Structure formats: structure tokens, C-alpha cells
Image (cartoon, rainbow, N blue to C red):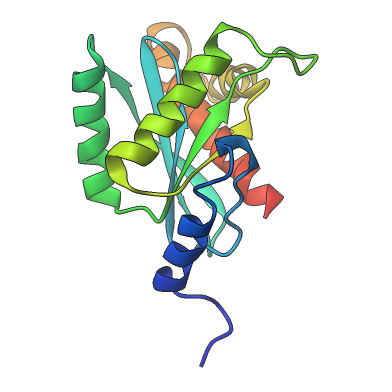
Length: 166
């Protein structure tokens, strides 16, 4: 029998952490697919990766006018990828203080957990959008094409950061 916990034992771990504030939750024993979100008021970047490979890949960008429409798109993505864990980027000022989007991203993470009954953790996302823009520019992707990919590539950076913390 393997020492690695299976998905069932991962679910037990996640239930045991539901009493903790979302910023304090850690799920190092969850295995399988992980989805990450770069939350924004207009666009939400999505990336996926596998805990075994610890490699993140951009998936898509959710763009919709209403929260219901955004969550419908996210539901489709979750149905397609069937993740074991969701990771949400935590926007902060460079000095570590919170700003307008910090509260909204926390609220988004809590809504994800409530709607999809999946464990959610948050990862510092400072500079991920800058890093994503630099990576896209280095790949020769600029202008409108870059704007369409930027949030998904930022989500990729968020997820890769999560994997590096494991």
C-alpha cells in the first residue's frame, strides 16, 4: 500500500480545515488536479496543474458581466477538469498590506468553496501579472492578444507558486 494519501483521505483533511480562516488553510497532502484563479473584477484567469508533476498550464479567462454568468463558466471548467483543490491568488500591495481587490478575492475564494464544495487555499500573487506580461512579451505576444492571455498566464504563475511551496 502506498504512503501517499488518496483522494478520500484528502477530503478528510479539507473538512478538518474548514474552521480555519481561508488564508490559514494548507493542503499539502491533496493529490490530483488543481485549478488556480487570478481574480479580477472584469476577468478571472484560470490555470490547471497536477500535484504529481507540479507544473501549471494556462486554461482560459472567464469574462462575463454578472457573477452568475462567471460562476456558470467556472462550473463548466470545474466539471471538465474535476479538481481536488482550488487555489486563488491573493492580491496585496508590495508592502504586504491589503487593497480593494484583497477583500474581493477572499470573498471569491469563499464563494468557490461554498458553491463547489472543494477545498480552497490562497497564494500571494504579487507581481504575477507583471511576470505574465513579461513572459508573453518574450514569446512575441503583444497588444490585444496579450490582454486575452494575460489573466490565464497570471493564474499559471499563481499555481506554479503554490506548487513550489509544497
